Length: 118
Image (cartoon, rainbow, N blue to C red; front, side, top):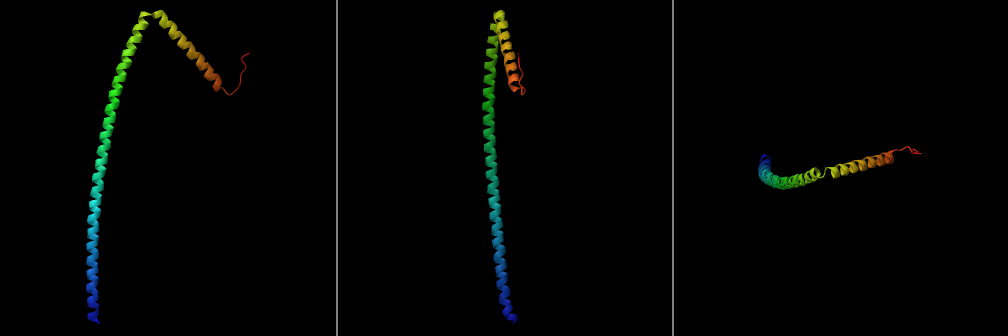
């Protein structure tokens, strides 16, 4: 009976060794997959960073051009205002009056309680 259990124990050892080898192989594969995933993640981060810098540079260039255009236009407006002070005063006054009237109209429209003006 002791001899019958001996072959069983060797086959169990073989199975255990085989399973341990498979587990070791699986660990190696998982390590390779993790390495591949981390490399791909690093590539994606680098690509996103490059795109962000490109967008920032583009936006900065546009903002610089826009600021220069605004400065140029503001200088032109200020020159015209200096050359025509009466007209400038009239235009600013009309704009102020229109703003006041628009504010009154919006205030009346937002008021919940109806009021009679007469």
